[in-house]
Image 1 (cartoon, rainbow, N blue to C red):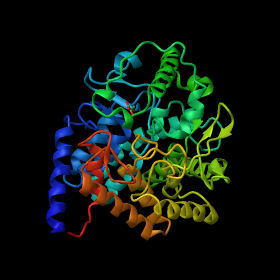
Image 2 (cartoon, rainbow, N blue to C red):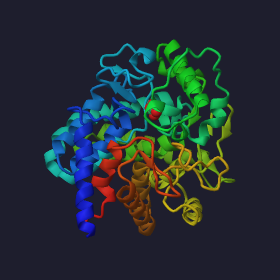
Image 3 (cartoon, protein in one colour):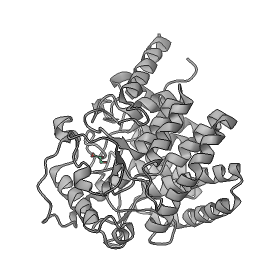
Length: 426
Ligand code: DGY
């Protein structure tokens, strides 16, 4: 019986990827997100890999085709215009072809490239060789433009860069952003998704104010990193880049790029030591840090558990993270909620303030498995499987009831099903 259910879900997941495929890139979901999104595409490539190896590589190649000369890779590529999304290219005004946003997103692409290569072997060397210089240039851009503390960490200059748009972590740094000059705008997301599952109007005013600031300085990324209104060292991007540097190093060694391999080793050592700066002993977790106010942001979020994925943390720090997982698992039916269930700001359906995200579960589970916690890794896989099987392919899920939240027919959730969440030996 279960096999039949799984086969049906396989078919639905495939159908979602095919329906969202625009020929070379995939929209996260029609309507709500009608362009190519950076980290969405990386996860989506893993889904395509389960039935079309070439198409998987193409997803990443298309994303990197929009790379800027200095290595920066934008968070949205507007291959075609679509008035159903706000803020579109006429708001970002980056003056690029193709049109893009002016901010980036968590760099998961190098890790995905490594996994695709490992699954496909020698046949994929051509693609690895083609992508390596672009991935390296992007990582260098992070190292040079976003490691303002010189500790191997990653500065985010807009909440949208972190991918966790309205995480409670950003409340305090966002509250200091001046919104007095925000131009009038009309949101389009609320025409597609319930308002109680989306960021608030106050959030949007501040997102726009930060965007306008970047636009006013012609997307000079060094100036934005130095003086922008939102400057936060993000635990999510930091752990993802550390892990991606490790995966890129494997590819550098594979290609015999020894000079680049040495460079990456240095960056990895720097970050391994530097991440201690983000440990918040009161919370008992790695946390983001507000550079403008010079304060740790004391929130335990699902991104804190990406320390395992990054191979970061001492034995005692890892034990404290596992103790949190244990505690949260006693309260939430499904792991891993995007904000600690015991935090007063926890909201089980509002975007990144509580809901469970399949691709975060995948990264955390992978880290847990590698760190020697296979039972927790399997728990996360099973929870993700149950959520998808019970509710469908939503953007995210309520950790208490399993209800789907945000957009439906979502590409990265379908991809995570095909790549990881479905029980393999059916
Ligand atoms: C949005 O528009 O909600 C996106 O998350 C921005 O990337």
